[in-house]
Length: 346
Image 1: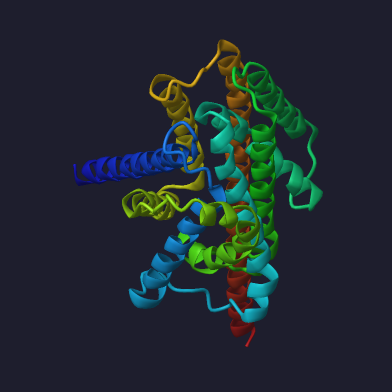
Image 2: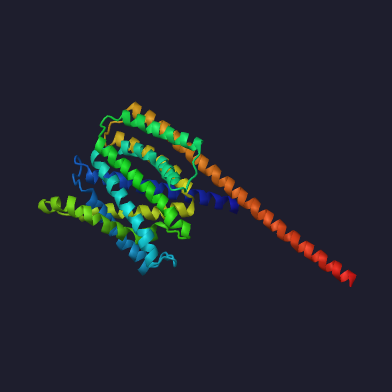
């Protein structure tokens, strides 16, 4: 009975972590849309908003790491490694955040989520380009099916904006490159960063990189807009949601798995599409849904294939460990038998 209760408790906790992550991810996306959209809060300054997020996250990450010591920093992180590995990742992350936040000005929430279905395609393609993934014809066919589905969804978009689509595609490309670079520059060197330590290292770096386009593109406009005063309630709660989302990722991946987060992400995307259509009153056409449905099936198959590959690798690892253990025991028995034989002869 105790085992049954512990299993139920574990399942309930897993669902709780999933629900928290979906809620926070949902909230950050809708909140950013509200702030940046010209028809809503009407503050179309995506670089400024991203810089506010990075400043807030840098400060809280510093408190959690240095003051409260919630997590430990990797001992292998040196100044040289930071400059060669973390700084390029920070540059890519700043571009990804800048472009992805900019899309809220031009595209609907529902269409943005449909375009984000291209992320596995971008990650796989860049992984093959940098030789982190091997080219497989069946995987490439799956990638093409996802791309075809997104293309149909784009064709059916009622308020298609080519500039907004270009921004979102750039955001996907930079984010995919960042994920591959993490594998090449950090994971391959035995360095694993959780969301808190990632923010501690990367957020200040992003802030510095974003200063350059901000000074040229947004600062002059903000300086001339003398009527604007920063609303600390709006931007404070928005930044808090963004930071809490990173903590939720830490909990979700740590207590469940990355695959669980991928599945939860699919649920979140459908919820956002429904919310965008029913509450924000964005137009979602049948062609939109048909195209995204095709892309969704392709992404689901890709996640399933990755899971099967992980299971196969894990099973092979266990067999190898069992073989090594059996070989070791056999050597010990042979050694004992040889020792006994020598004693008998003596």
